[in-house]
Length: 114
Image (cartoon, rainbow, N blue to C red):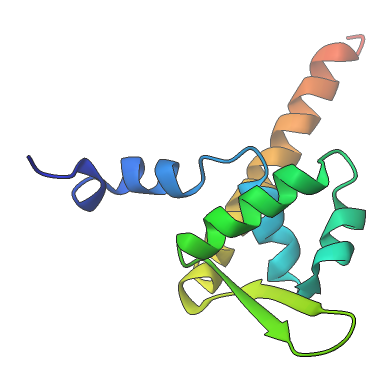
């Protein structure tokens, strides 16, 4: 049986970005390499366990690089991989859509009197 992931770009992308925080993590890493604690502070709505799981999945999907430094205490940094950096165009478009959508919702909440 053939694997749909290697045939359909939409299904493939959806699978890779299936985690609730995947896009947010990719956004934060698009601004530069981050340590785990930095990501944790940037994403206070998520738990340490969920962030760890999501980073591991993004690493397994080869969108994120994890670099461990042999120091005491341990020091780990995350960055976008080569293929992960190609997602920047998508992040830019998500930002444009998100801002337009927020503006549209606000305009519906506060219609101008004509």
